[in-house]
Length: 73
Image (cartoon, rainbow, N blue to C red; front, side, top):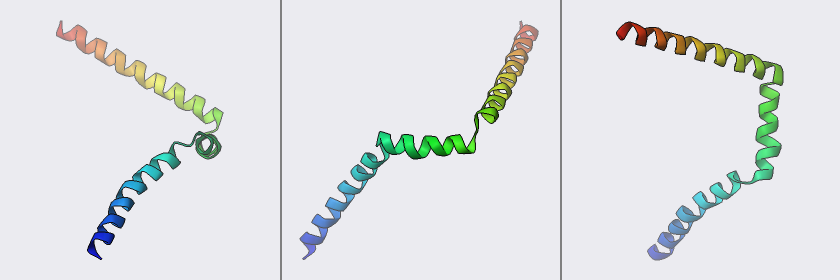
């Protein structure tokens, strides 16, 4: 009886991760559900604002690093 339980557990331990990997890598599921949900949460106008904000922060960070480099040299 103990061997059968161990074999079952081993099959479960091997099958579950493989099945989850296979399910999560289905391109149709990803396109239909995840990308659609992303578009609902972040419409294109909000995405543009976010990109502009990221660009502004990046420029500020670069300017700060340049000023620090100039002071140290």
